[in-house]
Image (tube, rainbow, N blue to C red; front, side, top):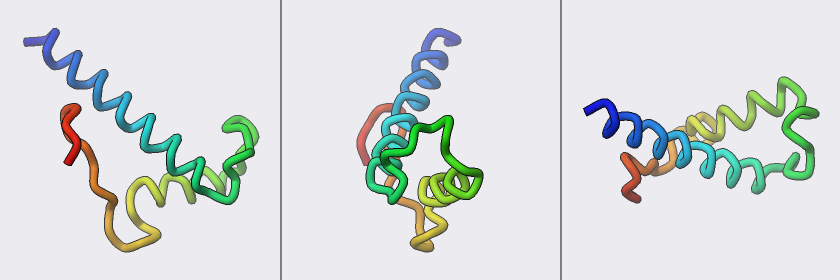
Length: 67
């Protein structure tokens, strides 16, 4: 059971990473290295990830299956 959960958690982290990378690539600060981003840029990226800018969260993939 723990191995299965570990695989699910690892996959979900991978999906979140891919989603964040895509959102950053689409942002006005796409060319800014992560370590040089301002707190405001981090907040904007987090808001986009959580769907706060549009009022609704983007479709998320669950357990490695596209929704």
